[in-house]
Structure formats: C-alpha cells, structure tokens
Image 1: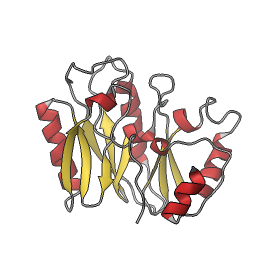
Image 2: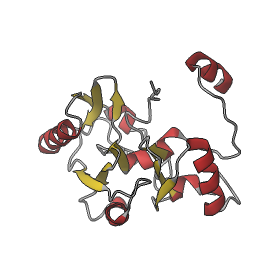
Image 3: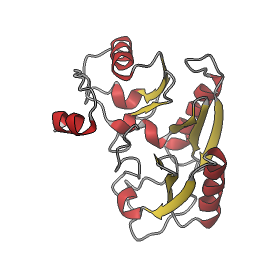
Length: 214
C-alpha cells in the first residue's frame, strides 16, 4: 500500500524503522515540527528508541531542523496524545493550541504545560511563536457521548480554499472557534461539521483525513 500511494502521488518513498502516525506529527513547512513525546516515544510504538535517536530520524524523514517536543499524555486516549489534538500550525510562526477549562479533566494540566512550552519556544527560523488558544467545548450532544469522546477544536483539516472544523453543539464555543479560525485563515472558508460519530471513537476530522501537499 505505501508503494502504491507514493506511485499514485508521485512522491518519494522513504523507509524508516520508526512507527509513526500522521496525527502525531505537525510541521510548519519551514523547518519546524511539533511532536508529542507520549505518542512517538511510547514503548508501544518505538521501544528502546531514545529521544535523541528519534529526533535525528524525524529530522531526516521530515526535513526539519528543529523539533518542539510537547509531553502529551499516555494511556488516556487511543492515540496516547496525538499532536493534532493539542497544537497545530496556522502559518509558520503561528500555532493554535488547545486549552482545557474543565479542572477535572486530565487535559487541564496537560494543555497548560503545552502552552508554557509553546510560548517560550522559537522555531527553526529563530522566531518566537505566536500562540493562539482555542478553548474546548463546555458541553456536547449526548447522542454519541462516551468515555473516548474527543471534544476539541484543534483537530481541523486545511484543504484547498477551506478549513474543515468540528462543532459540538456548544453554540458560544463553536462560534468562537469559527471566528478565531477565520481570522487565522482569512483567505479560506471555515466549514464546521457535526463530527460526533467520529469523536465518539476518540478521533476527529484531521484523524480521518490525509492532506496531500501540492
């Protein structure tokens, strides 16, 4: 399958010993990556691989010069804390990061630690990152409610001319998300979809898609 996809997309096929998922990797296209340790350095994926070894291989694979490591959190969801649920590049130098307001959630402390790291970080070009926060929904529809329900707005998908983002029935937070994304992606249409069926399984729009570079 990988060979078929590469041939169809006319892309270079690169082999690696690392086990990686697209949702665990976020890049800005200018040499910087954001990656969660809880996912990529997890023994259930890459046992015995040190952070330094992993970093070198990721730089080779992705062509990046700098990796901003976020701790993430392991064992709390099916992804072990994919990057695309916590932080995304809107543009080089600008990151959208999730902020959990529910103090009873395990993500309450995780998202605050991530914000500390991102606000102190510089990218491969030496720029201090501009960090924009997106608060998660305070309520969700109960039709698909489950312990695995992934209620967050960061898992959006950027496509030609649009940004496909979730909505969860929390009118105020849904609208706030649309407004922030529209400001960040001024040249694109913001389309919000009910993704409850996907979120119930612990995923989101970005999890269910794979962007293809031009």
